[in-house]
Length: 441
Image (cartoon, rainbow, N blue to C red; front, side):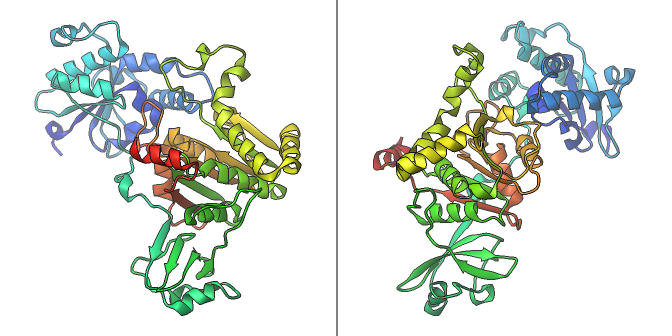
C-alpha cells in the first residue's frame, strides 16, 4: 500500500489508559503519541488499579521500541503494522490559540494533532480520544476525531438477552416439563435459531406454558422451578431464570443486566447466601465512580467513612433479605459479616487477589472497562463463581458508554460458553411507582 494512503492516528491519554495494547490495533496505519500524553501517563504509573497497569504496560511497550527514531520519523510497531512516533510540544497554532486556553493539557494534545494534520498533506489524520468534549473541539477546528472502538459492541439493541419465547409448543412437550424427570431431549423442540448453552426459554402452548433451560452438555431441555432463596421469591420469569443461574454450581460465570429495580443485586446476594455452605466466602464489591467532578478525597472522615456511601446500596439489599427472613436469619447474616464469611468491599480492594472457592458478586459492572472485567475473571481460582450485575444504559464512568463498557463486552464475548449464563431483566419489581418512573422519566 502506498505510504500516502496510510492514515495517521493521534492518541489521547485516555485511550492508552483504557487499552495499553491499543497501538497494535491500527493495522498498517501510523500512530502518533504527543509528549503531553507521556507526561500524563507518568502521573498514573503508581498504584494497583487498571489505569496504573495500562500506564506501566504502555511505558514498557515504548521502552521495547526505544530509540532516537521515536522522535524522528518513528519506528515500526510490528510486522504488518505502521510506525509509532512521539511528537514534542510546540508553540500553539494561531487557530488553536485563538479559541482555546493554552493552560489545558487537552488543548496541547489538540494543538499537536492540528499541526500534524497541517504538515501531513494528502494523508488522513484523526485524533483518537474517549473524551466527547475533546472530539467536539477537534471537529470545531476542522480536525477529524473519533472514539477508540476496538472493544466496542456493535449493536447493543441486538445484545444477547439470555432468554427467548417459543410459541405454539406441542402440549405433550409442556406436559413433560411438569412430570418426572422434568425434561425432554432438545431434539423434541423445533426452533428456527439454535439454542445456546444455558439459554432460558418460555415454552408457550395453546393453554399451558413452562419455564425451561437448555442444558447443552446433556442436550436436553430442563424445567426451571421458581425457587426461593433466603426469603426472596422470584416475582417473574426473568427473576426465576436469574436465580436458577445463580444457584447452578455448574455455571461459574453469570451476568445480570437490567434497569434499576429489576432485582439484579438482591437476587445475586440472596442466591449467594443460599449457597453459602458451598463456598469459603461470599464477596461483594462495586467500583468507586464519583457522580460529580470531585472524587472521594473531598468527602469527610477516614477512608472507611469515605467509602461507606458507595457501599450503602449493597447493605440496603442485605437489609431487605434480613427483613424477608425475620429475626432468626437476621442473626445469621450478622454472624456471617462478623466472621468475615460475608464481605462487602470496594472493587479496588479486591484487585491483585486470587479468589479461591469464593462466591464473588460484582455490582455496577457497567462502570468497568473490558480489561477490568477480564482481570477480575482471570483472578478466579478453583471453586469460584462470579456474578456481574449492572445496567448498560446507566453509566457513571466518563469514558465508557453502552457500547464500550465491560458488561456489554462480557455479554457479547461470553454468550454460548458452557460455563456462562446471562439474563437481562426488564420488569421492575421495586414498586409500581419506581417502575413508572423508570419507564417514563
